[in-house]
Length: 116
Length: 116
Image 1 (tube, one colour):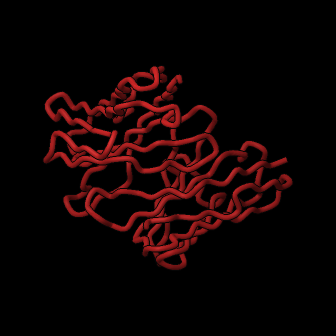
Image 2 (image 1 turned 60 degrees about the vertical axis):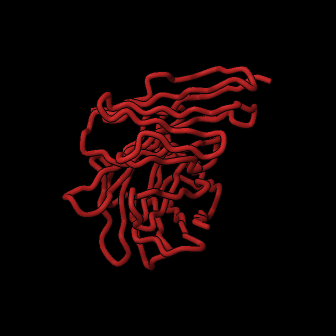
């Protein structure tokens, strides 16, 4: 049962344009969402997160949008740069037992390629 | 801040031997550490969750006698692959959480294990 899904395995974008990476989730208990970037043979790097009390969070070129009713979030990168080429994972978390946050649930990842 | 290191970055061993991988949070105390395994072109697979001073919680299908986890302090967790087999060859990644809201995890750079 895949609770966090990234339905696009890959995305190709021209440098300077917008990259939009999508993520859907099924568990309504999730209330915190994160995006990670990963290069081959390296650990994931945290990019940006959003709490369910918000619908948008922006940090420089990165913006995450959350649509709770649709159980959908997206990561926008503007403008896209060749150095952004990597695998992007979305992850979700929720309070287990109503107290603390537990393990992250990851999507399958989307390979972003930004062409010069 | 929030830097996590792993050692070694690469290890090659013979079948039947044991290999220890260290994960350290360098500039913060980690209430919880996590161990992941990544198969080629696959998402991160959570193996176990460990809290300092207590036994690790293993995910379904992960052999706890084969993958020994010791969380000796708030800055150090170790994963020992016992009696390694070629099918244990993989990329192992640890992460650490500070226990803040959202359960954000900070990842180490990963360890490439090759079992001959």
